[in-house]
Amino acid sequence: MIQSMTGYGKEVIQLPSKTITIEIKSLNSKGLDLNTRVPSAYREKELEIRDLLAKSLQRGKVDLSLYIEVTGEETSTQLNEATVKKYIEQLANVVNGDPVELLKMAVRMPDALKTEREEIDEKEYETILKGLRKALEAINTYRTDEGLVLENDFIARTKTISKLLEEVITIDPERIDAVKERLRKAVSDLKEKVDENRFEQELIYYLEKYDITEEKVRLKNHLEYFEATLSSHDSNGKKLGFITQEIGREINTIGSKANYAPMQQIVVQMKDELEKIKEQALNVL
Image 1 (cartoon, rainbow, N blue to C red):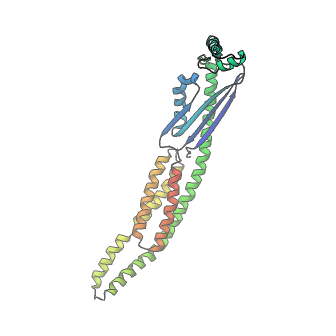
Image 2: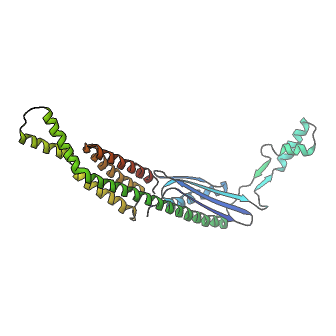
Image 3: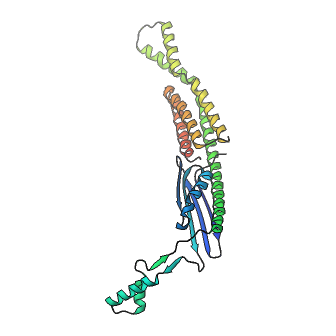
């Protein structure tokens, strides 16, 4: 079954003094484009996190956000007392103000607060990895569900093209008769006596140029191959894209050889369906 590159996964972990939120979003992309936002304390683990994402998601524009909200008394930010006192002294020399007001001003000054570098809590990190794996399971489930929607759409559109191909096959004999009639009329309009044998030879030559037997067979085969690929284990967006190129080539050739308005109208409908398939194939993993 195919998967979409579009997906979303989220996992929220509640610890005694922290709330950890892991959010993963993905959109379509030619390759794997990873963007991660993690707290500074976990920067050294970023490569490991990115590797886990790459192995699970393979392709797409992926955004990972890891938020850690302190909900208890725990904090790594402390007041830099010596610096604040110095600021208050300097401010008091400039203005006569209430000590509380001077303190409010002082704590807004540079280096009034200091943040101690947090050491990684390995137990907490293991909890984050478990949450990350759950978020990846969620986004892959989302991708699979989206893939099923895409697959149903692809099948419906290839069936439509197949029905239009049947119409092409049905009207092909009358198209040939119309081409013959046009050529005979063109010759008769010349009001010249024509060698009938030579005319027949020329007629056969032109009819061979307009013949679309091979294109009809190849188009049918490509449509069947596209549907078979959808359910194969090695199905992917790039492979489906290559097959749609082949389908488009046969449709274009039929259109260029048609020389018959009713058939050209059918070809336009085929192209319209194929364009929609191509657009959706860009979203397939």
